[in-house]
Image (tube, rainbow, N blue to C red; front, side, top):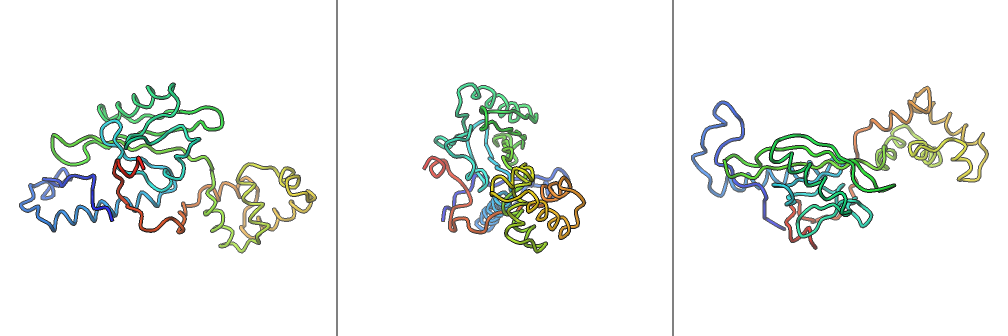
Length: 246
């Protein structure tokens, strides 16, 4: 298990007021272990968020990539990890990405930009985090939030279907409605009559107590995220440049 933590041991509490801001009299093994435990806990929290999240120090150095981002950053994604740094794949996006992150790190300004082309185009929100630890020499950080490519997550749809007692066929219809298909398109895709699909939709609406397809899809889109429990076990929570480049 990797024991490296990207968060330096703080000399002061981050809270601006009260006793939490006073210098800590002791920073021995117990406090270092507590800091490591908190870093791992925060990494676990990030991994349960159903949005791709990339934590950066300064303008490029990657400190953490959550599971959703790792799953998304494949060969067709407009962002890539190289040598522990986050870079745009297309040359035309390099300057825009660096400017957005640098502005967040140096000026504390939030930015949103679109990168990539065609079907691979995504929106990225860049959130300034300030100093990653107290102290004048602490590096500033930024959090990149990757836009979702699907409105409704597959696991959220599955959980919703099970909670409302939908059949497998009804769940499939619900999933395709959430993907933006019309009842006619669903019928054509599966070679069934439109009346069959409409009957399935009526059953779904009755079981979920939703008056329209629009409200049905909206209710699924607003579900809390459900991350997969089938992820690789034993993976280090905290990323180092060496692991990210592997």
